[in-house]
Amino acid sequence: MNANEMLLSIRDLSIAFGSGAREFIAVDRVSFDIGKGETVAVVGESGSGKSVTALSVMKLLPYPAAHHPSGSIMFKGRDLLPLSEREMRHVRGNDITIIFQEPMTSLNPLHTIEKQIGEILELHQGVTGQAARARILDLLDQVGIPDPAGRLKSYPHQLSGGMRSRVALARSLVTDPTTLLMDEPFSRLDAQTRALMHGELLRIHSMKHMTVVFVTHDVEEAVVLADEVAVMSPRPGRVRETVAIDLPRPRDPTDASVTRYIQRLRALI
Image 1: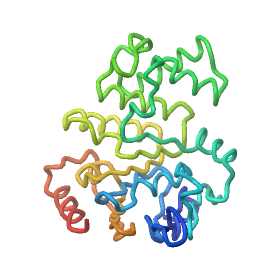
Image 2: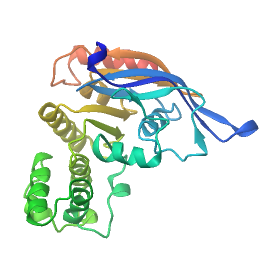
Image 3: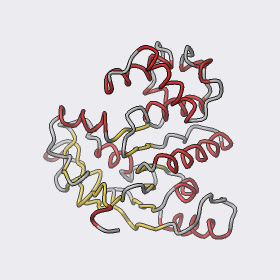
């Protein structure tokens, strides 16, 4: 990867909580690079710091209790760590979006799907009325929701887990971001629905050429989805090894070549 292809570069990033004698180092000098259009998975067991590493990219940690003893997060050539909250809101709204582990935590149970996607359109693009409705229908169609018009007035609790994941994905696409962070978004789905969502993510990635950072504890999921996998070890979190997945897509987890990567990564965790 040459410098012109680099989009996100994390260098010597440390993440600590507390101070003095009570300071806890969660992540210790983590480094990895992500090129434009790449999908990078970050895997590791619980406590390896994979989620807090991803959240630090958007500065969504509980600052000032959280802080960074070292490191930089270079995005499009600019270090995000020194940016003010106001500057970061612009980055979050236009360049980088995130999907959390449980879509219900980011979807308002009191608002319809139309309202929840529409408020983002109005806030970031000033689009309202019929233009907003048309854009919402298009987004819902893009993420594979059947009968999008019939879902506009639905509330989150009326949708299945898979449908909520699709709505969360649709919301993340509103501003056409260059980078999508995903913090174990499919971990609570059943195996069949998760496989369907993998297919949807790969289809959308191919269509929009987004850069994706995918946090997961599931090694099989990482091999199926990623171009490269960063394996983190715990206490404190460090990148043990970065493995390039040199296989064509789609990838069948039962295929021998895919299985070899899965076994290799499992041995590292």
